[in-house]
Amino acid sequence: MIRIAACDGVTPYVCELGKILREWGNKRGYDLEYFMCPTPDALLLEFELHGHLDLVFLDLHPAGEQSGIDAALRFKRLDPTTEIIFVFSECLVMPDIILARPAAYFLKPLQKGKLTDFLEQWASERKDDKFCFSMRQIRYALPVRRIRYIYHFNRKIYIYLDNGECPEAYMRLEEAEERLKDCDASFLKAHFSYLVNLYYVQQMGKSMLRLDGGEELPVSRSRGKEICGMFDAYLSLYGQNRASYPQNRT
Image (cartoon, rainbow, N blue to C red):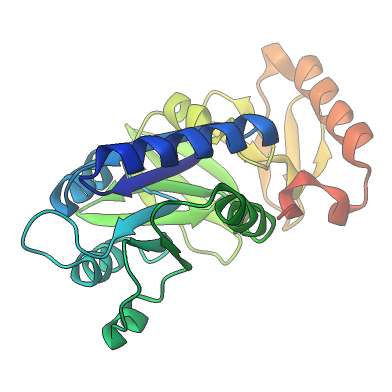
């Protein structure tokens, strides 16, 4: 899933941008969501309600009291992983613009070729998918590739990462599974309490699986044969060379 927002009150521009983005996304086969936010406050509300945005096209002089630079800095404090693209109607030298560390600049009206070239470059260098959630007023955007497995207990999930950390969140395992289904890693619900990243699985049996770090996790007995078959299919598709797994795609 790629989530992109445009913060600009000029409707013709944001509509044209949306058209270009959707054409590009359909051509590349991406699952893409596009949001139109007339003001920086509306942009922040979208983030508050629905979480991480991959790209934000931000007018340097949006409607409202905030400047585009102030809005970008405020947004980056909330989600440093979002890429900001400034859009403006005329070339102006603004030294403070560097503080926002934008990914690109575009003049209006948009040139479809230049925008598409940028999107292709961005997609080729895109960082790993993120697993986004909030807990105790702290927002997390965890790289999916770092998640070894997720354990559900007493209305919370515990997210075991490859560095030993274990953030937690109030979430059903089914919701976590739904959020992860479109990412570039393969997760398997091996048990009603466990969601496992197949990248880290070393051995699979009908009642137990073992990760490469030695952890042993249960496998649902009623689905043991089916789960083993899914793991075999995963290995046949990507080979037993870990470097070929979808986990490492960029």
